[in-house]
Length: 61
Ligand SMILES: Cc1cc2nc3c(=O)[nH]c(=O)nc-3n(C[C@H](O)[C@H](O)[C@H](O)COP(=O)(O)OP(=O)(O)OC[C@H]3O[C@@H](n4cnc5c(N)ncnc54)[C@H](O)[C@@H]3O)c2cc1C
Image (tube, rainbow, N blue to C red; front, side):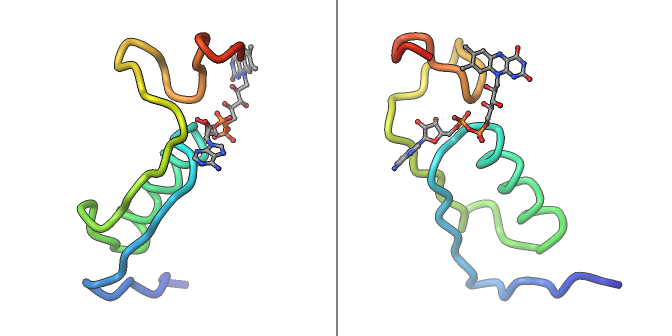
């Protein structure tokens, strides 16, 4: 069954930029048709571009 596509104005706020948040963003874009610019990832910690998503050694994880 074809998934219902999101309205062009649909905005999504995802809490957390771990693998679950990033995977959700991909599915929202590719399967639900949400526009990438309408997706906001809310992350409590600064993101170091040299670290992989979901693993932030500076915070004891
Ligand atoms: C030490 C360690 C080593 C690991 N090694 C591996 C490995 O080698 N291979 C593997 O497959 N898995 C590994 N894992 C497991 C893997 O890290 C997790 O399964 C995966 O990160 C879970 O993804 P997640 O998106 O659900 O959660 P997380 O990666 O924990 O992401 C959640 C994000 O949400 C943010 N967040 C939480 N609450 C809020 C809030 N209120 N507001 C804003 N942001 C918020 C957090 O800061 C975090 O960035 C390891 C885990 C640990 C702890």
